Length: 149
Image (cartoon, rainbow, N blue to C red):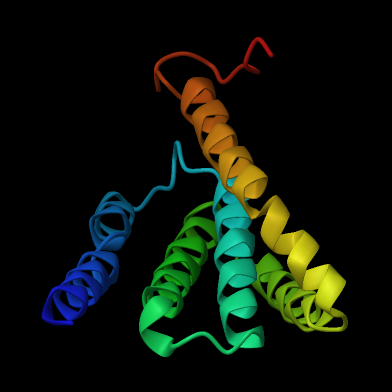
């Protein structure tokens, strides 16, 4: 039991600072170059699906406590990206869509189960979108061009 509590606590501690270096870097540099809004939105969708699934099936809080912390950090990072890209006006529509989507997940058991099954694919697409963004902005001296795929 002690080992499980230690594992849960260490996971929560690591997750609570996971995005902080990235947030600090974006704020310090005053640019979000190389960061993908699409990637971050997909990551948020995956986190929200997992959190909703866990709460829907009433899993113990200790099994998913890090996800609200990760979601808050992703939202802060998203706001920074939108601000530095000059798109802060799109924050409200994104918020509305996330709330509607979050509520739609719990309409029927089949929907949340299907969403949870797809969450690994969503996570992979998030990483792919970030890699695309990094590929596109790999050299600030070169004009931005589309990735070859």
